[in-house]
Image (cartoon, rainbow, N blue to C red; front, side, top):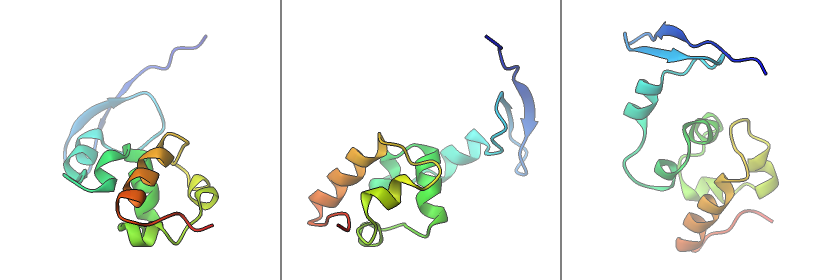
Amino acid sequence: MTTLKSSLRICSKGHNYYKSSDCLSCPICEQERKPDNGFLSKLSAPARRALEQQGITTLQQLSTFSEKEILQFHGIGPASLPILKTYLDENGLLFKL
């Protein structure tokens, strides 16, 4: 099994961080932009970015998509669906059928 070596990186804001993947996102910047509340605050950074890249920032916008469509976004995995479903349900909404 090959072990990936972490490399020191510096983001555009000057944060120093180590990463072993090709992902360019700075974990410090991601933590700073994480919402304090709402459904986006409960998602992983990749899942949150995937929804934001699609312009989905409200539950009403989320409800216009089907589960299948949401799962096709890069960064969204099956673990995100129960979180999204819970928030939709609590607000009287559903995924598009």
